Every structure is written in structure tokens, then in C-alpha cells.
Amino acid sequence: MNMHMGFGIFNRRFILPELREAVRSVSADIVFLQEVHGEH
Image 1 (cartoon, rainbow, N blue to C red):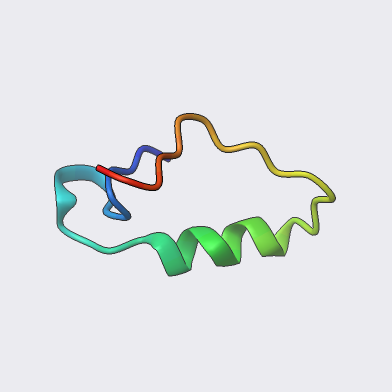
Image 2 (tube, rainbow, N blue to C red):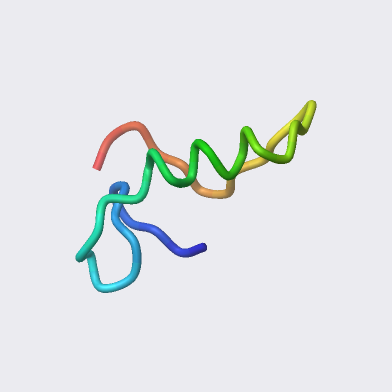
């Protein structure tokens, strides 16, 4: 999934809640996110 500032492709839809649920659904012990920044 490619996202920028919480929005999906073409910045049309806010996807952070959807991403959170996808991560939770796999019940992973560890999740790695690449290039996540707290500021823009």
C-alpha cells in the first residue's frame, strides 16, 4: 500500500483507519513500516 500523509493513491481517500485495521487483523507480534515520518 502506498500512502502519503495518511491518504491513499491520488490523495483522494484518508486510509489510516483502514491501514490500522489491516495491521490488527493479521495479529502480528511485530510490524515494520518503512519511511514513516512524524513531521512533513
